[in-house]
Length: 244
Image (tube, rainbow, N blue to C red):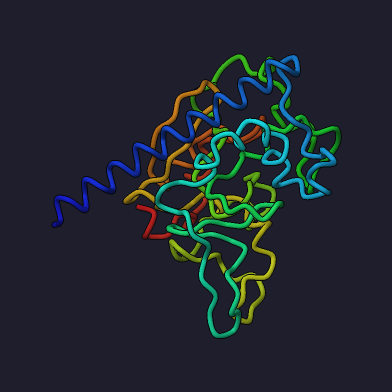
């Protein structure tokens, strides 16, 4: 039985990577239609919800293959509890989050790829990639979409909440001081720092390649124009023990 379980896990991991590769294809098709530019994060279809705008903009692509919106390891929503009977909107290692239109998904966008017309949700316009034509190197280490517990994230060293890892692998770090997770949407790196496939998560990159990486390797990716891939090494205690 353990061997069968491992085989199923491997099959789900392969399927997840295949899904992410397809999202890379969707973005390739989209940028080809818009002279290399990514979506703006402000399309009216998102009704102001910038983190999930990409999901609505690409709807014509994924709606033909709805199974692509979830990782096989994270299909169902996060169950409620005594204090919150309904399913939670956010996802987890093995659960999906709720998108703008109510669809449950388990992949999120690196929000720095947006062709933002101005600063967006506190993310400076100048740090966005904006267009595939603007990227001449590092294509294989610029994440596009990843396993995620929320719609998207824009990791940045501007605030500790934007670059830290969660205290525990399947929980957002408490931001309210009373045991709740108020403001979890702004915990930029915490959306992606989850070991969904053993000790790894899967990602697709700007060059179209897709594969798994260890959680601790997320800080070494080139998230935005100003992201320093080595800075994490100079921040004591940034990575909790569970990421290593």
